[in-house]
Length: 351
Ligand SMILES: [Zn+2]
Image 1 (cartoon, rainbow, N blue to C red):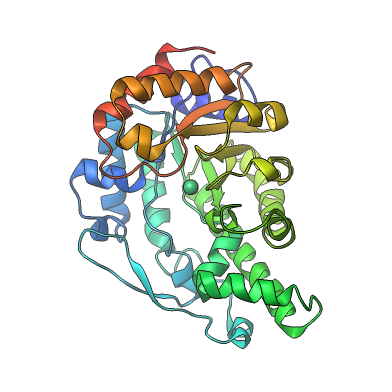
Image 2: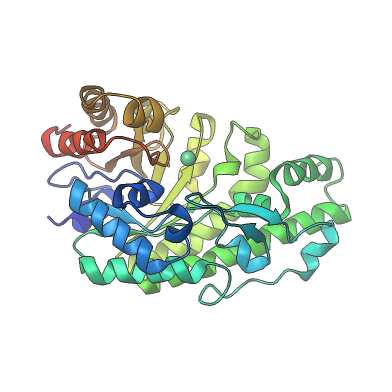
């Protein structure tokens, strides 16, 4: 099997020849290739070259076009500041007053914000790897994107207030905001598929149960995630690609609704017990994860990484439908020996 075949086999709940392995190596790839993060996140060519050089070191099964969070929000008018060798920070938010939501328009992913940078990186990676290695697109989630547009704290506070008056004008505007963010993510993910992505995703980190209650997740984040995957999964399958959802933190309490979104792969944070996830939803969705990016991949030793990988495969690898991954983004400073140990473990251990 090629790497891409291995990933797609698992995504479709099959058992590949080896456990597929795909740590999330966005900015880590920039550091490994020796390029500055502020150059990396503004050039599709620099991004693709760094990820190719990263793959030449690790030979993992999926490469990623990933860096920061704001490239889609910029299409809505978010202003950012770039800093030397760092990812950008938000400076001016497009939604000051709630009424500003009515002025927002779904941006064209081919021209707006820094979405073209990522589409260019995907196209370059797809050309380079010619379908042999899976190419993972970036993509934030609808709930997180709403937070980028009006500020995270403000967004969560407005939602809490809107819940007091569900039919009030504020609640209506917030529902409109969720509609707009979902539409823009659908448009971006479609453009990623057309650029050659093998995996398209929604990474809805703000919808974490570390940040909001399960009730708020079900009411405000889930319906948009469901609409995203309801549209993207059939389309991805027609492209011979797969869809992925990632939410940071301990999502054990909502694994079933997460599987009900229609995402093909759930990439789980290291706070989720993989054996529990396998028992709850592993028969209907591919699980991916969940080596701790900090304690194992950054601060751990290669022996500790190997042991953690073996335990993850033992917990969730049985019968296939599993990809060995990192619980979240791998820190730039994680030692390469640890990533090599992770990939080697997947090549060595079967469930
Ligand atoms: Zn995460």
